[in-house]
Each structure stands twice: as C-alpha cells, then as structure tokens.
Length: 87
Image (tube, rainbow, N blue to C red):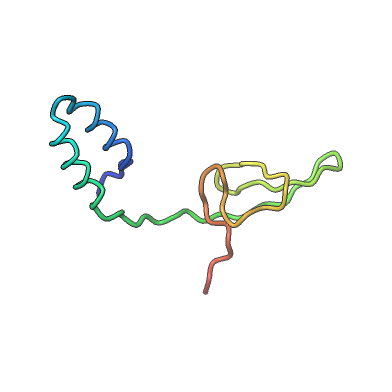
C-alpha cells in the first residue's frame, strides 16, 4: 500500500527547509514534479432527492452534502463520482 501525499505540500516543505541550499531545493522540486501521479479509485455515490417544507434538494449518499441547485456529476464536498456506472 502506498502513501498518498500532496505534491505541493512536499514542494513547500523542501523550499522552506533548504533555505541557503536553494539550488539543491530546485533540483529536488524538479524531481518531485516529475514523479507520475498515482491513479486512485474515486468513490462512487448518487444524489438522493429529498424535500422538506416545500424546498427541494439533493443529498450525497457518501457524505450527506446538501445540494440545493441541480446536482453535478461529482460531489463538491467529498469528490464522489455521481454519474451512473457504465456497464
């Protein structure tokens, strides 16, 4: 199992820690930028239609996020893919 880290956070740490060794920092940053991004499986969810007091809204099945406008293909809160699974 691999650790998933933020590339930008790693770059920020290198820049901060290297101080006077900025040439080395730039070399490390260039190396970090060239590491391929790992593909992760995105969780899948669905929008659950609800209404209360005359108000109509949708809830994310994964995190419960409430969307008052027409729902999108992805939950803006947890990133779940809300498109129907392709067979």
